[in-house]
Length: 123
Length: 123
DNA sequence: GCTTATATGCAACCTGGTTGCATTAGAATG
DNA sequence: CATTCTAATGCAACCAGGTTGCATATAAGC
Image 1 (cartoon, rainbow over the protein chains, first blue to last red):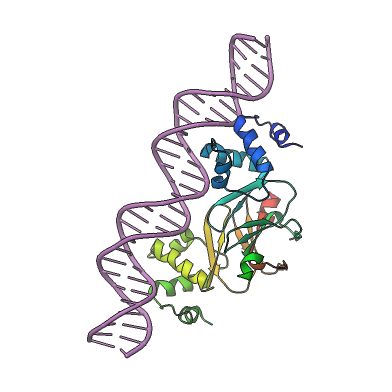
Image 2 (image 1 turned 135 degrees about the horizontal axis):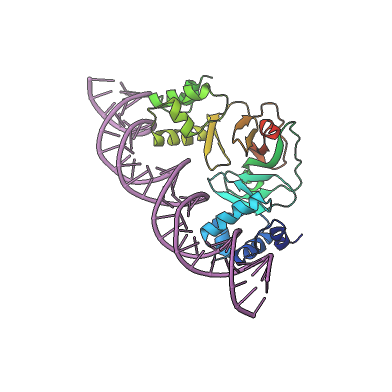
């Protein structure tokens, strides 16, 4: 399913800002914040962005994660994978290979590890 | 080591607000936010609280975790354990029994799961 | 007890994110 | 293709959690 199709199958309107949002998110390898998004789309309005993040999260098109700096990062919600947030360089890495544990009774939607990434361990 | 000793061994002064902060945190079963802390200590000053959270995090006396609502929660940094944040009731649970995986190259300081807790799954 | 650096408490501030509301523009209908 | 209706946008004002500057207080060493 293409990003645009994911919008319409959820009964949402295919608007210009939404097409651009999903197009830009499709080309990201890591979650990005509004601040970073706005560098790639200089015409976006802040409230349009955040309102769509909420809409897309409810439709499970986008997934949000909280950084260690009180910011929210977003990425396309494709194959589930944990994230690693480095507390030193604040980089967010997608751990595509890491296993997802089974916690009986709990339904896990996201996993976030925080700590020191390999690059920051070397210093 | 008592909480007070953890302060002095880090070269920090044993002040009245600090003693109260650690005393209150010692009696908590879950991480709490400033909002919740202030209900238990009505004389605390917001900046004193947050400055001490930073100091204590640096001294590894306190550990902070980000909620799914853009708030920060804190708990005494004792035995390392993952946390589960329910996206429906927003409760933070300590998963004392859950295993801590090994990610080669990464040093893990905290693990946060988000999703649906058993109570919210039943509804 | 005196001294000095550290910590407190208050107010002002910052910033990420939200809300209200008038306007715009998808999409369905005839 | 014009009309209609509702969802979505864009702007400005706002909110809340957390931080900062600075004068005052106080813990700890002598």
